[in-house]
Every structure is written in structure tokens, then in C-alpha cells.
Image (tube, rainbow, N blue to C red; front, side, top):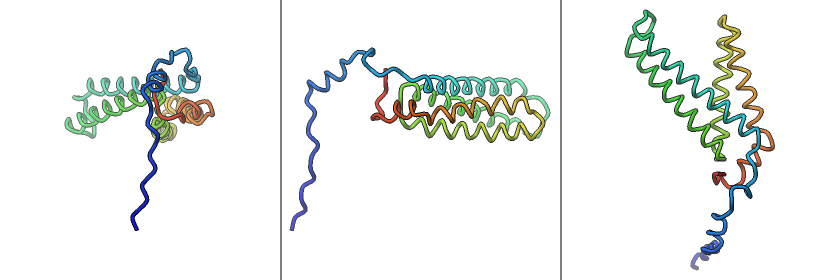
Length: 157
């Protein structure tokens, strides 16, 4: 007995493909404000991590527990983290569905970091890290963001 053939998806004709590509940007659903705010938070965090890396470069010769090799590795790690956060912010803005998980992971790291600051004697810095992380975590699970990201993982213009 031979296996039954798998059903095929109907082929998309070129007319419908070009018609969907010709839809003007005004006809697309507007970008919800929670997505814009979450993108701004992620972008600002990326800039601040990059600023921290550059600031760390200027203190490479200062005495401390790490040698120069360890400090250079930490700078490279910070630059990579800033690039990751900037990439996630850009992709979240255009509507990629995978960015929700990346935003959540990044913000959970921010919460952990803020706990270290709060318990380590820098409460202002802890609150500065905690508040945007909490806002981004709430907004990334808002219904408007969910609807915007769930469509079909196609970028919005």
C-alpha cells in the first residue's frame, strides 16, 4: 500500500502577490504606541550600554580586580550586547514576532541588574534600571503589541 500524497498548498498567482506588495503604507494598520515605547526603551538601553563600554575603555589603565585582557573582553561583550539590543529594537519596530522573547529576556536581565544595584548601595541607579524594564515588560504583553506582532511575522512599513 503506497502512502497517500500530501496535499499541496494552492499556488499563489502573481497578480495577488503584486497586489499585496502594492498596498500603500497608509492602508497598513498603524503601529501601536506600546510598540513605539518598547522600541524607544530598547534603543535607549542599547545606547547606554554602548556609552558604558566607551566609558570603560577610558578607565582601562585604572587599578582594579581585572587585568587588561579581562577588561578588553568585558568591553567587547558590552559592545556586542549593545548591538544585540539595537538590533532587537529595530526588528521590534518593524513587527518581527521573535522580538517579544528577546525583549523579555533583555528586560529580565535589567531587573536582575537593578536588584544588584538596589542591594549594593546604589538605589537611584537600581530604580533607573527597574522602571524602564517594568514598563517594557508590561507593554510587550499588551493586547495591541500582541496583535501587531502576531500577524504572520511580516515586517510592517
